[in-house]
Length: 84
Length: 474
Image (cartoon, rainbow over all chains, first blue to last red; front, top):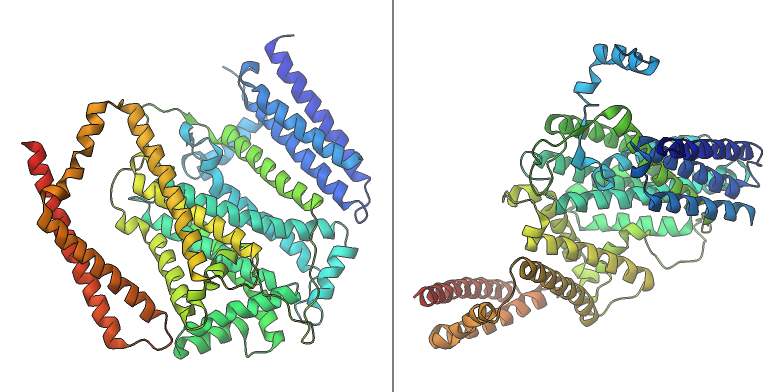
C-alpha cells in the first residue's frame, strides 16, 4: 500500500465512522438518552478533528502515530461509555 | 494551464470583490500555527457557543423570582437535549474563563503587550473583566439559594464605595432592592448589555489585530519565514482545535451533568456563602483574619491595585526584551501569580466560611511565593550554568561580594540599624492600618520613618556596590 493510499484509508474509515455515529445519534431519545447523545457528539467531533489532521498532512510520513493513537483511544473511551 | 476547481473559482470571485485574503483572512506566519497562539480564537468560539446555547435556553427561561428556578428545571427535565444544553452552557462558561486566563498569562509571558500592542492588551484585559461579569450575572439566573446568597455578598462589597457612587451603581445593578428588580437587571446584563459590550470589544480587538498582525516570536523575527494560506490550511487548523475543545466540554457535560442546588426563597434555610470557583481566590483573601470587618476595604483595594498593575503593564514594562528566559523577574512574577491563584482557589474551596488566621495566611501565601521563586531561581541558574559551564574559580569569584560588608564595617552597621527601624515602622504601619481606629500621628510618623529608612538603605547599598565594583576592578 502506497503512502497516499494509507492516508486515504484512514480518511475513508473516519468518514464512514462519522456517518455511522450520526445515524446512531439520529435514533436516540432526546430526553432519556441525552448523556449518550453528548458522548456520541463528542466522538463525532474527535473523529472530525482526526480527519482534518490527516487531511492537512502533506504525506503519510507527516501523520504522527501518537495523535492517531490518542484520537483512537479517545474514540474507544467514548464508545465504551455509550455502550457500557 | 491547470483548470481551477469550483471552490477555487468561488474563492477568487469573493476575494476579487471583498479582498479577504489581503485583509482579515491573510496568510498566517508559520510560528503562529500552535494551539497557544489561538487561545483568543478559542475564547471567541466559546463566546459564540454560549450565545447559541443561551438563545436556546431563552426560549423557555422566565426571569422572575417565582418562575426562574422552575423554568430552569423545566429545561433540564422536559426539553429535548435541555439537560445537555444547560450543562454545556455552564461548563463552556467555565472553559471560557480558563481559556481567557490562559490567553492573558500566555501573552504576559511572551510579552506581546509591548509597543505597538499596548492598546490590544488593555482591550483584552477589559474583555476578561467583562467575561467575569458575564459569569457573575449568569450565576444568579437559576435563582438558587447558593447563587442568591453569594450574589448578595458580592453586591455588598460595593459598600466600600463613597455614597455618591454607591447609590447609583447599586441601583443600576440591583434596582430598588426587590428580588424582582435584582433578577431582571442581572438577566438584562447577562443576555443583552455584557454580550453587546463583549461583541464590540471583539470587533475592536480584531481591528487592532488587523493593524498589527500576529506578533513575532519572542526570540525574534525569523528570516524568510514561510506563511500559511488562510484557506484551507488555517481554517482547517482552527476547525481541528475548535472541534477538540468543544468535544472536551461536551463530553464533560454528558458525563458530569449539572446538579442544581435548591431554589431560593425568603424562608429557605441559611447556607454557607461560597461564590463560584472563579471568584474563590478573592473570597479567600477576604477571609483572612487581617481583612475581616474594617480591613475589608484594604483587601478589596489591594485586589483592585493588583488588577490595575496588570492592566497598565505595557506602560511601565518598557524594556524591549520579550524572551521569557531573558526576563527572570517578570517570568517568576507570572508563575507566582498563577501559583497563588490556584492555591487560593483550592484553599477557598476546602475552607468554606472559615476565617483564616494571619499566621496561616502569611505562611501559605509567603510559602508558595518563596517556593515558586526558588524553583525559578534554580531553573534560571541551571540554564545559565548549562550555557556557561561552572568552574570552581568562577564560583569563588562570584562569592567575593560576600566580603564587602566586612570590608565596610561602618556602612554595614548603619545599614543594619536602618533595617531594624524600617522593619519596626513597617510593622507599626500594618498594625495601625488594620485597627478600627488608627492613630493618624503614629501612622504618618511610621510611614515617614519607613520611607526615610528605605531611602537611606538604598543609598548605602549603592555605595557598597560601587565600593565592591571599584575593589574588584583593581
